[in-house]
Image 1 (cartoon, rainbow, N blue to C red):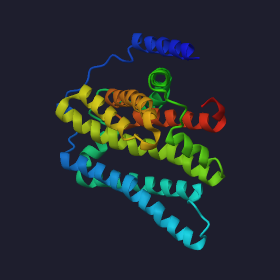
Image 2 (image 1 turned 45 degrees about the horizontal axis):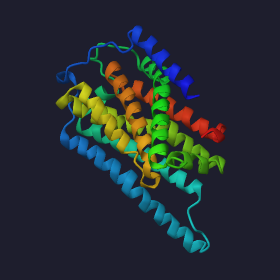
Image 3 (image 1 turned 135 degrees about the horizontal axis):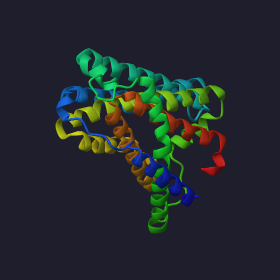
Image 4 (image 1 turned 180 degrees about the vertical axis):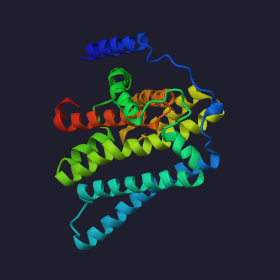
Length: 285
């Protein structure tokens, strides 16, 4: 199977290269929207505060309330957990967007769609370019992840493990409501929040100071590291490597099109196909 995916990766990316998909001039950092250090720290501070610090606190609070009502309860139902996650992701996206809008309105509009960019295509075109770029990125991410997995298995005895996101989706399949919350979070909200934060915010911030190529690499690294999960142990390594490569494609699309809609299109497609593979073909994971 890995040989077929490798052929897919090489073949389609070679065609894309020959057709000029990867040929474009990086725009000067002088033309990038300005996002200040204070603004980027505010955005990440809000994200960390709400999603990483406040979410567990809220879950524990709900569990204590549940335990008082039912002393036999050992954990929150998955419907409650998925509902909390969904609600807070809506809140965090609204807070991040409104924060940048209030403090830096010109940059807010330019990170979504830069009208000064030479590729003046519609957001609709940008989005579906991102969707079709899945065909180029997925086989590369899959092959690299598989190779790293095999190396860790042979060198360090890495045993079978499930990623945190996979466990979450499988648990959410226990009820239609929890699955709906999970699907909306993974397919819609996660791409919106993460692309706004890492490409629109962080990549733009780095580009103004270090140039486009360094900005893509650094924002991709930060994007990958933010998905680290202590419970996965060595399993974090293939996850971080594969997300770093995906982040490179997302950052490339954002720079190529000057549009957040292009990276959102790829991110949504990647998450959607991954989620439906878990739901429809769990035995292949």
